[in-house]
Image (cartoon, rainbow, N blue to C red):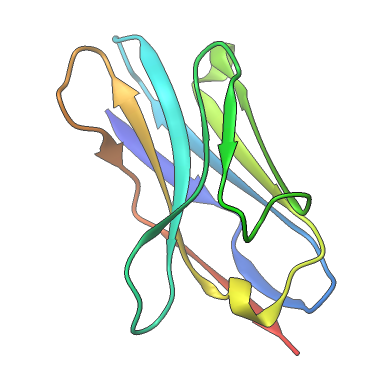
Length: 116
């Protein structure tokens, strides 16, 4: 099973981007899915997470600006990012619980750059 993230790019502060991540060709049930990010010189941090039933968790820094959602039929998770700030610049990674695997699987990352 591969997680394929897309949707990153360059945007001005105050703009919006929508990230997508699909778990392709998965014969297993997909559990919780989430987005993390890693800025240069910083540790990877949780941005948002969503369970299969739709319960959401957000980092305080993105609450009210980012929205995580998912389409279970497509095994896809989305991250709508509004009111972007330069400090949101990072590589964004998706992950997912796949089947009974003890650890989540990770996607390849997509770069988001917010200019001031």
